[in-house]
Length: 196
Image (tube, rainbow, N blue to C red; front, top):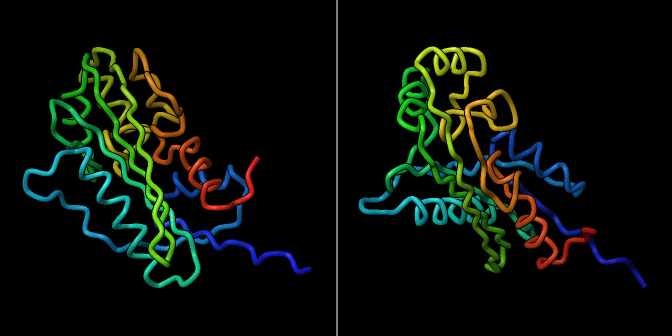
């Protein structure tokens, strides 16, 4: 009797944060850039946007990867019903952090595991972050020190960004970094990957 062929896994992301998180599960995987337009559609809610983009990213890669399972994930911060994405520039990061000062922000992370044959498994996470009241000096020092320009919400919770908060409410501490590993492990087990 021959052993079943190993399942191929691809992470549809160029994010080093997601790559580092997925590596914790000790499964071999490849990485591919999904090349998906991440613009919101008119009237699209932050939750709907993250769900759509997670699926679109996974699907874009799965189309070119016969026999593979592909993980797509998307995250954004939501404040007053509006999405805050990756700042890209220090001045935008400053503005985002100033707007979150003393407030609670919802971070939505969607996950989609798509097979090239059309099978699909989905999950989502909601993490609530309470920001301390921040001074302009604190925000400037933080942005200068950590340069969180590629992070939704303009901070890195796994780094110095943790000092900006008064509380985090979550069921999965990895979700805030960009890939909810509890949900990821569950979906991978459902897809037949061997995990503890």
